[in-house]
Length: 392
Picture 1 (cartoon, helix red, strand yellow):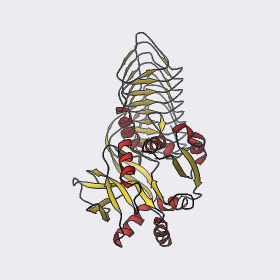
Picture 2: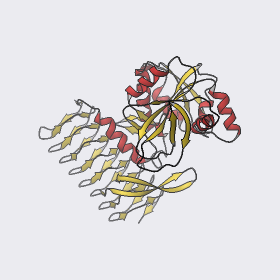
Picture 3: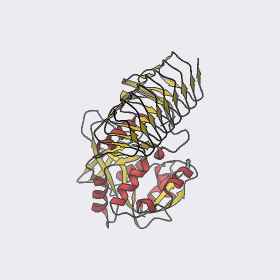
Picture 4: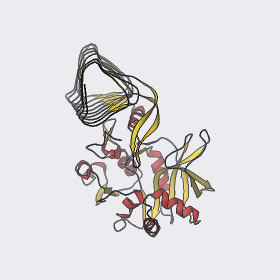
């Protein structure tokens, strides 16, 4: 997720102007779960100050700190002294349909043993394909032929405290991920039930996953709310939410689903197409076109810019006439083992926070611009621009 996670944990990245983690809290609350233990680490102050004790969402939250992030099983192990005999494990960087979560909780509540929520997919996943017979997990295949129906691990589990000796066993062998524990248990014929989810599942692994998640969440919008001032000549169609203190100037056209934060200045003559989220205090200058994108708070989009299928970080500034091209490409990303290239379908670009880009710049599909970069006018960029770069 770099450069978007430079100054915030991934779970606090905004989708439809809400942190990813908030969707998980809401889904758990709707399923009837009221006591939540959050295992926090990187930039945990942001998580704790936002969610506090959970009262706003009708839940009770307590926090456990993982001082060194080593893997999902290691994170879960930090909570072994504070969870009850039966509990749900929910990954904070996933967005699951509330109905799927409620069904999983209902089906597993009160049962002894372990279960994993799985979802059907048509492509391989970095989590591996879950092989199940009569709902029993019998293996995990890391590599399978594409185009074959697959069952993918969502990372949502029902567990009891018997899982902790299994985690200890694996950590002694240097394995710190829950998927390693699951695979080890399957190999030793220990029972782990697979429960099939229904509905959406979005796992935020790469920056462009936010675009898909944003579109998916906004698709559920059924009504709009105008909290700001809209010019009489502006046209708003479909479900559009506009925050308090925002101003939509003359001849703008906004087609929902779209969400616009508070304190924004937009227009005149701006076109905002569906599946777009605009954070608080964003300024969009005249004759800008934005489509299927996320613009985070405090950004300034200069006039005559065209932004498509892109993620623009906090405090970014475009002088004007910026164009983000869209296409299928391979994008260089940072993995634990170093940098690698990952295929991305129909993507624009990703721009890290506090970057300034001069006028008449073109960003080719899959371009990732780091944090705090300075780019002079009249450039055509591609690939990865490292944090703090000056492009002259």
